[in-house]
Image (cartoon, rainbow, N blue to C red; front, side, top):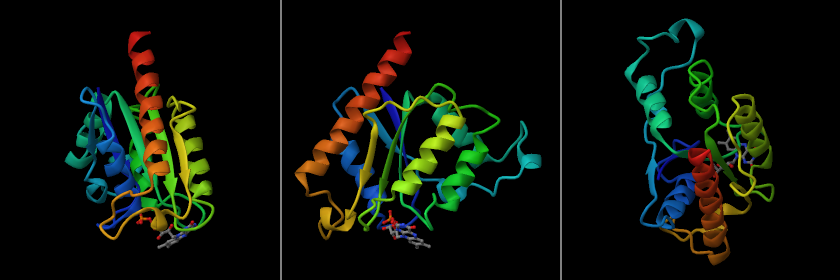
Length: 181
Ligand code: FNR
């Protein structure tokens, strides 16, 4: 099984990306979690740029999602919403339909007590508009995220490690069901 992991943060020391790395570390041998690294390469979306010969980064993104059995997105919250770069990515996927029926896990993380819950709700809503499958257990809000990582950005909190494992399990189970139906 092949899972594409997308962080909504471009920061090299991103806590959200760190959570995705920790989730990837939990993957069993038959599950490959690949981190998407090209969010910063996507051009700004505009409908007249959305055609068959669209740019290479957009083509690559669409191919990666199409070939993934499931997707996991982990995002920070900016001004009570999702980061513009992440919304830009989702806009590129509206007409091409890669998220239709795709199992997608949604995680938000923030240093605040809300854990980015508004970004989580907004991202979940947009994905539901794109008719993605949002498995119930593949959803997590992580408050006070900085306290739960060590100085090297590794997840040290065993509760959080288990929560990430639960998200991964729910996502792989949902994706297996989808493939067998
Ligand atoms: C933030 N941050 C933030 N946090 C939050 O919980 N709610 C919010 O509305 C915002 N708004 C916001 C706006 C802007 C412009 C910035 C730069 C930051 C803080 C944010 O959650 C924090 O920087 C995270 O650590 C970013 O995630 P990464 O980059 O560590 O993954």
